[in-house]
Length: 153
Image 1: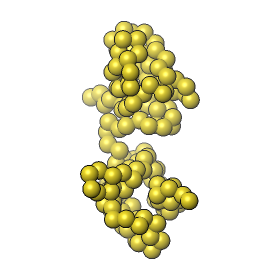
Image 2: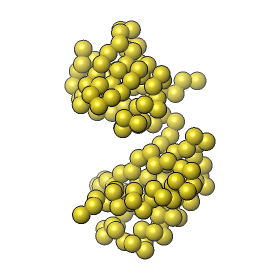
Image 3: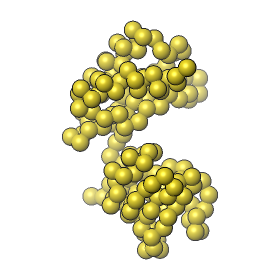
Image 4: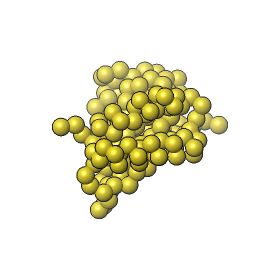
């Protein structure tokens, strides 16, 4: 049996491609007594309120028709924001050369929070030019609890 996120992605992906939008992230989470289906969309031109409305209307109609989610939930459609979470290898690759901030599960070379220029990301390591030490670091992907790009103005 497919997960809720896999079913929603299957329904959503063709529509997003037709609209020249990208599925940045998708989550079905429980917060307190409520469930939320969160869809984050992106495009090279940015995301407008109209883009979010279009995707929301499409999902409302198609999820009602197919009814893949049996419990009550709230649907949220939005942009990942200017400073966005980097979760997948593709997310990291898009921000090579940019400054990022990473929180780690445990300390690495004496630091639990790292900030610096993203050099690369592969299956095993995130390579970063650390702001504090000026050194290039190879941080195991398994140690990264949270990462996001940093917008500089």
